[in-house]
Length: 144
Length: 79
Picture 1: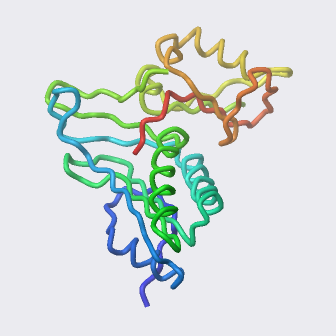
Picture 2: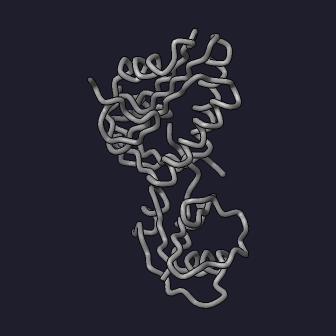
Picture 3: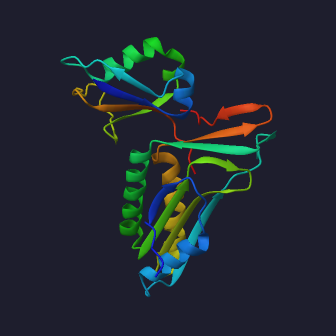
């Protein structure tokens, strides 16, 4: 039997959307709809070419916050299950960064929860992104 | 000692990602921040969030204990 990975993870290695969805579906046969979000590494930023992204996290705090976020989403939207995976380290342009999946009895809460989780993740989880381009590297620092 | 953690853009500006700061009686989060900001002004220009032992700390008058881990962080940009 294949090991089931944790529902919330921060990892260097790539992930499989199929595996994550399979794990989510295995959690309950009451699931009638799954909404997913996949964040990818764009190859441009404000007209500059971007060849790679680098991600750094305050690991322990980021993982705790992502778990809290998942728990909150399950309660708030009445989800049956949810998964959040974020990569750190270097990701080539075109690669996968983050995956979020929300499973609910009906599609409405699944869509709403998925959107809510990625929006909240961006606000609340201590992870930082660096863009690597032929012109040099720069951290993405949203304005306060 | 207080362990001070800096990440990403803050660490790059400070040219260091971890500092040890001598604890003293009555030391508050604000005092620690002020003293570090004086020696690393460019890094602290972009600090928006502070965490003590992995929890966001919003009270600048929070007293720090010996052995605390304090992170000064720029606005997050994950996802």
